[in-house]
Image (tube, rainbow, N blue to C red; front, side, top):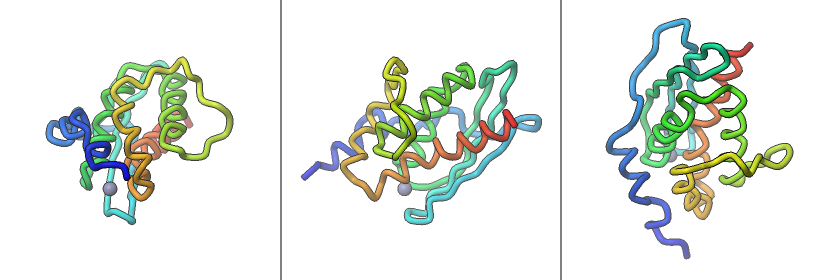
Amino acid sequence: MPGLEDLYREIILDHYKNPRNRGELPPPAVRSEGHNPLCGDEIEVFLQVENGTVSDVRIGGQGCSISQSSASMMSAAVKGKSIDEVRALVHRFRHMMSVEEEGEPDSSVALGDLEALQGVVKFPVRIKCAVLAWNTLTDALDSATA
Ligand code: ZN
């Protein structure tokens, strides 16, 4: 049996207690929201894209510690990256979380702190919590680049 220590790693708790990039961004930043009805998680992503780069990101919403810390870690990971780099990171993260994806992810994309969320895979019902922010980010990216 996987232990709860796999789910609540220290870095996950740190991001839950001290969420990074909380807040909102005014237009022309795009806004996207996502819900995970299974757990009651809500995530809001504000995304500012300039010259093909995510120049700023802010996170709103509420929910369980896995959903909120994943959103915080995501915001820290994507800020300053190009759209292509962010899409490659989303692909790699979703693959790590056992979400079915087309094609193999680029293994040269570094996950860094995000690897702490790998333990969530052992708790299948929580995978949607961890992936929610990333799906919401993808919606925001699609809006920003439409
Ligand atoms: Zn949740």
